[in-house]
Every structure is written in C-alpha cells, then in structure tokens.
Length: 217
Image 1 (cartoon, rainbow, N blue to C red):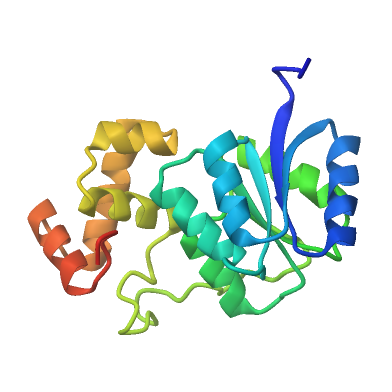
Image 2: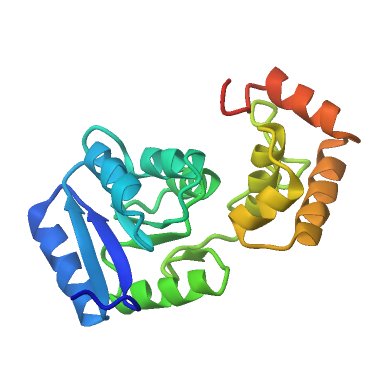
C-alpha cells in the first residue's frame, strides 16, 4: 500500500540511463516515483492523469519540451510543481523557463542535494534556481524591457496574476490557485498595473488582447 504522506513524483527524461538515475535519487530521498516518461507529450498526459506533487522535466525532450509541458500544466491549472532538469546554462533558457512558470531550474551536473533543497524551497513558496547559476540581472528592469515583450519587467508572481486576471479569474479564484491571500492578489494587481501604466481591468484586458497575451490569443 502506498504511503499517503509520501511525496509523489513523475520523471520525464528521454535518456533511459539518466532517467533511472533520477529514480534512484528520488527513492533515496523518500520520494515516490509514480510515473516515468521518455517524451514531453507522455509527461503531460501522465501529469494530467496522476496529478503528482512534483514533475521532474528534462528541458529538451521529443514531442514537447519541458517548458512547453510546464506551460500546458499551468494553463490546465494543475497544481503539480514543475522542476526543469538540464545541462543548459544559457540565460535565455532560464528566462524562458521562469516565465513559463517553473518552480525550479536545476542542472544535471549539480549536486543531488540540490533536488532536496529545491523541493523544500518550493514548499515554502519560493522559486529555486541552481546555485551554480548566476541569476542577477537575468530579467531587465522596466527601462530595459524590450518593446516586443511588454510584460518582461513584471515579476513572476505579477505575471501569474496578470495572466489569470485577463483570462477572467476573480481575486479569490487566483488566490486559491496560487496559494496566496486575496489581499496579496490585490497587491500584485496594483503593482503590475502601476508598472504597465494601466488603471482598470478593462484596460488590462484590452492591453492583453492587443499584445496577444491571453490564453486564447
């Protein structure tokens, strides 16, 4: 019988040797591996079916990349926490993953204890990036934000709130989804509107449609 208190994990990695190694790492940390996948599409289907606590996703997989899987998991409002595993140290890859909503970005050549650190950090409400990576200056300031990315200067939480607001969710619904209080949602909403120089929800939705930033764009 499965231990109901044990943390469940799905592993998605196309290289079998690495995948089996990840299974052993998880088991040594009392994490229950409930699914193994060799491509992104299978990973997405497994996450949808099992809704594990965590998903360990290779960045580059056949059929769907790890980041694409994260985007679809977020769109489906599945609460699985997503951890990207990769050898890529490219700032563009880290930036794209964080914007997609990953909960952690880990390097495959890092210490296995980083996985434990990441899970603990995520449980405390944080987003974990491998300590082997430099993230200072990863996101541009509002003055440096590129014109073709109008929300580049929003924080991850502001981006999350922005996305859900323009797709019709109310503050209470967003709070439940992001596991924060409605008051905190209001704080993020005020902050992102100030950064975007928009003063009401109608203007925010119009902005999102014009820049193709809604889920139906």
